Each structure stands twice: as structure tokens, then as C-alpha cells.
Image (cartoon, rainbow, N blue to C red):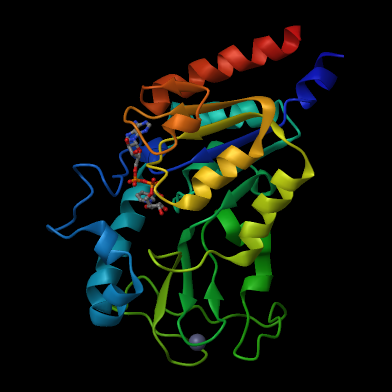
Length: 274
Ligand code: NAD
Ligand code: ZN
């Protein structure tokens, strides 16, 4: 019976760069965010890529390197622990790193709403070189499409030398390749939006946790607020205040690596007793 009670705690968890900060991945707005005195919020744009593609690629290669060297921290691990106890759970992460995945979060319980930094895609056609984890595993060979958009899974794909070329070019059409992330000012992937919307529409969430994000994007606040059931909780984990604060039922002003393991310990026994 205990499990049946567990399963009723529908939970939406939203994470941002702060959750990976304790793994050594700089946030954009933190003091370590600047790279060679350049503002990440300006580098992560289509305009920066159009003006200085080589520089933007250098930055992304550096970030890929930092992420490869990093390990999931107790916040990632606590989230996986929570997810394992619930079958009505969705993680929406703004993080483009693969630390949630490497901590053990299954693809089907996670939406990487801002893409996957390890994916590389063409600016001119549909060619995609899959990322290391995240969405690549979920969509599999569907992502390897030729110019026509036809599935190309049967044919061996010639992987361009994406890591060493200054600005990699597409093996199909010759245009520049770019990282598979959503840049500032770009639209989200409609399939990923739909997954979040489906989760929210299906039923209200007993618990909504928003951790490590400035909540600067309207859709983050919107999803968190709309997902919460009338009597549900909306918990925010962030050392700093954000625009989400007025909507939260509880604020935890601590680093995610400290707060989330404790919060998960708190939530799981509570559920067992309900
Ligand atoms: P952000 O850089 O704008 O803000 C980080 C937030 O995390 C801040 O509110 C900060 O107070 C909080 N924070 C810092 N350390 C924390 C900790 N130890 N525990 C909990 N909270 C902490 O990040 P954002 O809101 O996610 O949005 C920025 C954009 O940059 C997103 O699009 C995201 O995809 C991208 N980004 C991703 C990564 C990554 O994948 N790891 C890293 C940097 C930026
Ligand atoms: Zn192409």
C-alpha cells in the first residue's frame, strides 16, 4: 500500500543553472559566468553566432569540456531519488548539460527545454549529430535526417569532425553547424513544450519544486504556477530572490546541493505516512 500512496504525489520539478553550479559549471549570471570578459547572455545568441561563429564555437567547446569533466552533485542525485519513488513525475530542466542524465534520470521523465549542448545541428538543413545523453537518447535516429527530412537511420552517417573544425560544417549541405541549444531570443522546440503542457494538463501537481533558476523566462513561472494543485506546494530553492518568490508557498534560501537532499528526505517519509 505504501507504494500506491507514493504514486499519488504528482510532482513537477524545474531546474536551472544553479543546480549544476556545485558541480563547477558556471551559471550565466554568477560571478564566474563571464568568459574572456564576454557576457554569456550576449554570446548565447544567434546574432553572436552570425557575427563571430568561431568565437562562439570556442566558448561552446570550452563549456562542453567543463561539463565532461564535471560530476553530478547531491542535488542531481536527490532529484533522481525522488523521481524513482514517483510515477507521476516530470523534470523540466533549462540546463543543457548532461548531469541530470548522468545522475540516473531516465529520458522519459525529463525535458531539456533549452536543448542539449552535446548535440550539433545544421543551420541550413535538418542534419543533426546527436548529443551524448538527454534528448539524443529519447529521439534516437530520428534526429539524423538528411536534407529531405527523410529518416536516415539505415544508412551509416558520416560524422563531421565537429570537435576540431573551427566552425564545423554540415556533411549534407555545407552550411555551418551550431550547438543544439536554444539561444536567447529563439523559440523553444514545440515538441518539448508539448511534453510539459501535456504533463500540466493531465492533472494538477501536489508538489512543484523550482531550483537554481533566476526564473527570468515567463514560461518557467507560468508552468510552475499553473502546474500546482490548489492545495499543492510550490517550493523554491535558491540562495537569491527571484520573480517566482511571490508565488511560492515555501522559500528555501540555500544551495541546491544542501537543500534538495534534505527536502527529498522530508517529502518521502511524509508520503509514506499519508
Ligand atoms: P542563471 O545563470 O540565469 O541563474 C542561476 C540561478 O541559480 C540564480 O538565480 C542563482 O541565484 C541560482 N544559484 C546559484 N548557485 C546556486 C546553488 N548552488 N543552488 C541553487 N541555486 C543557485 O540560470 P538559468 O535561470 O538556468 O538561466 C540561464 C540560461 O543559461 C538557461 O537558458 C540555461 O539553459 C543556460 N545555462 C545552462 C547551464 C547548464 O546547463 N549547466 C549553465 C549556465 C547557463
Ligand atoms: Zn546541412
